[in-house]
Length: 285
Ligand code: HSE
Image (cartoon, rainbow, N blue to C red; front, side, top):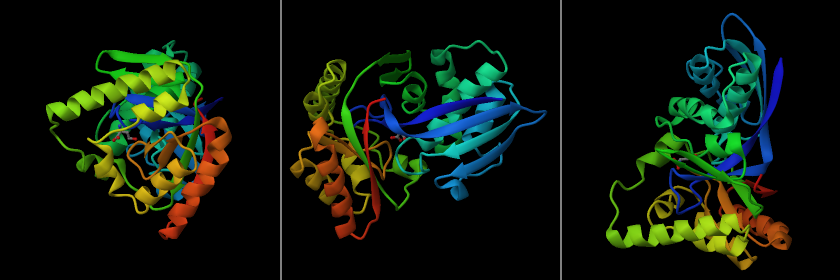
């Protein structure tokens, strides 16, 4: 038997749609695997009732197939599904690491990224790697068609999760298919700023680089109370706020000593809009 802890992640970070991702120090899934003749899946923990245990429909089933590694796979969910914190990616990354070890497949963490991304295709229809890359490699990651780059970073964050779920599949439907040259220029500038901020572990630069007018406004419109929560976070000291992944989670970057105030402000703003929300004070992991 092998057991692996796989962290929550936040993808996009505003300006890096389908490219940027960051691992969070908490919450996390715990994935355990045991050799078996055929793959079976058992899910417990946060939102387990919403997750299919059929290997054809669960992200880890695709990973087991890709590694030719049938197993009984137990997933203890710490990362709530459809929250915007890479729930399916955490399970896929955990299963990939654990099965690679259990079956001595000898693949590196980088080589496991496309395999875990296959699991993402099962739930969202697209094999995007921006959650599985940080779940496997940690830190800040840039996933492109050429591969994945990662760096260690140390940035304080708050992830606030309203209860109303949004499926990644639905949230991908609202993303525009074209951008203007002005939007492209602004996005390149913001994404570059964010990358420098991550390299320097500088929350102010990261916050500035999170700005995005291409994808985020369309996703924010799907989240009841987003504008109020984002304004409240900024008033409480956040340097930047964006939709976490495909939402409904909201990610704020702030000075370390403002995390408690930012978390409380966002929860209160969601409550004022009739939404129950839970906030995690966390760090890049
Ligand atoms: N990049 C993906 C999206 C991440 O925004 O659809 C999903 O968590």
